[in-house]
Length: 76
Image (cartoon, rainbow, N blue to C red):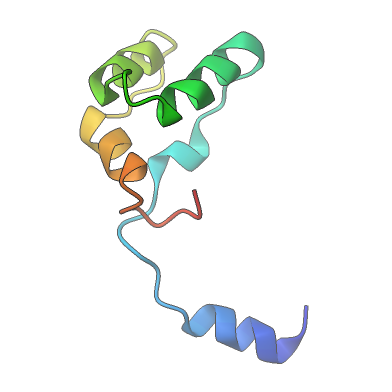
């Protein structure tokens, strides 16, 4: 990596708190359903949270809602 670009990247403020969704570890059909659910406005953040909790991934619905509004620190 170019050192000057690295300095620019480090100088860019991060938007919002760190995103817990970047640590979701799913595969196969579960991952596909999760990714599709995030972009489908008919699927609620509470439903996604329940889906994850059934797979022993504890992420609150407001964290999912914040991610969907692009108010978290991830690149989405």
